[in-house]
Length: 118
Image (cartoon, rainbow, N blue to C red; front, side, top):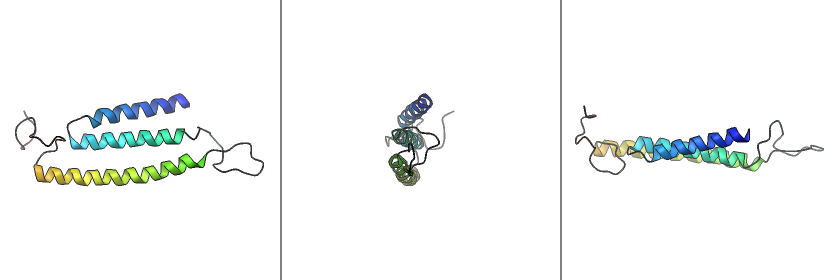
């Protein structure tokens, strides 16, 4: 279980980093979203991966799962959703004003705003 979780976190982080380095705003937003998913999984896994145990102590119970990482992940999900929505609004607005979606703010590589080069 731990190997699967570590592999998933690594794949999400690598994909997010790759997309974050792309020259388009939508790719960068997707990269930030993938990295936030990886951080959420990392926070969740820090509370020990326990299957079938209650998140609270019971009278006479032998073990429990830590509820703090679960609360942190729920909070992080809400914050990352709000940040993704804000970034999408900013990207759409910047695309509408400049006519292209390059991250660096320069001219598009094909020299115009009429579409992809042929």
